Image 1 (cartoon, rainbow, N blue to C red):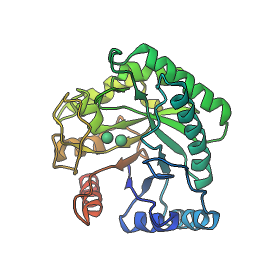
Image 2: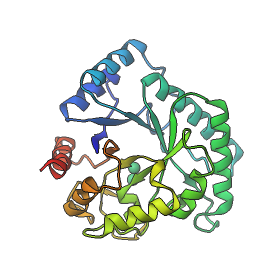
Image 3: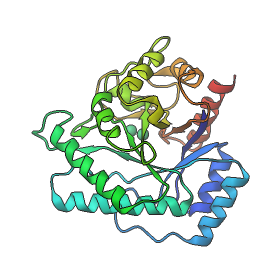
Length: 283
Ligand SMILES: [Zn+2]
Ligand SMILES: [Zn+2]
């Protein structure tokens, strides 16, 4: 697996790339804009060129962009949904400008009284993505990420996710599998047999051929708690042995990006988590 971590873009793209190098990243994830909202600042092209050069010289690829959290492709409010589609299209374009290969998005949020994995909400996501892919025809691929199913989140079951993902062509849309979210949704990764079981289940419903990236996060929540709380690698309910088994698993592509989104409680946590995950792969 190509290991990396989510790196902040505060200070610009070149600074982000330098941080990725100092953390020992082989792949990297970023937001292309502030995740909390507002209009996105134009990208500075000299800064982007500098970033690309640093990433290339240090063999860091792919660059993965995560869409901001305020996007809701499942919204039943026409204004919210159309704004979310605009942001999706804009972020696809920004990812292309940045030289990124993938744009990760969560599936969306249903209405409170809708059933879990509401088919109506999924139908709205389908048309949102369809419209975005009609408007953006470049090389960047959308990756749908599984959720923990917390609150009104949809997209936590491999069955529902699989139907949606397989409605689109493979070259336009893939999957990003988050270890902590899957655990929160009730998929038991824990060693020794867990990893093979979960990946076989994922393969059956979504298809491992659609899997383009993983989010490697330990989980503060317990199995099936539907809680989206990431923990440091080895310090949550998944544990070191689970990550070792994932990194060793022959069902996964050798060069699959595995990106950490672990908490930063103390200065130095990103480096500590990167060292830990690399040690679990290499030792
Ligand atoms: Zn994630
Ligand atoms: Zn999460």
